[in-house]
Length: 126
Image (cartoon, rainbow, N blue to C red; front, side):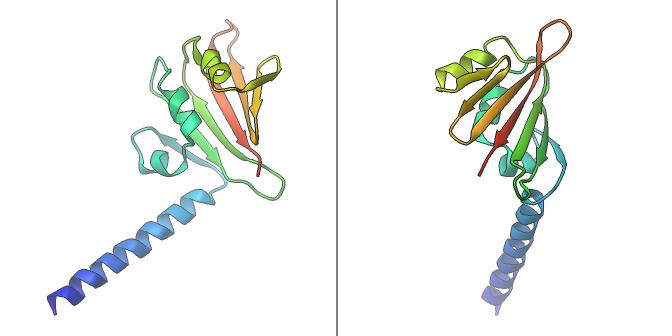
């Protein structure tokens, strides 16, 4: 009798977890920080690595793919100048003034008026 309660509890927890992950993954616009559950579900590895180069607390914005629109993940924080070195070290080719690409991933670097890097947007094309 006790094992039935344990199994049903695990089953309910699993259903809730799957529902949360599905709703997060298909969300049109989702904002989160690095200490949230969404960070572990939605943030791609390259964005996580770049977030380690932030001078202040990173803030993320996620938008799911829709038709021909790619998945977009934005990292907003003041990044150290080595951020561009991270992309070149990981074989991303420079395709524009502030854009890098490798395979189906494209990074756009966002700078403020002083030329400081204040964010990165990563597009994933399927």
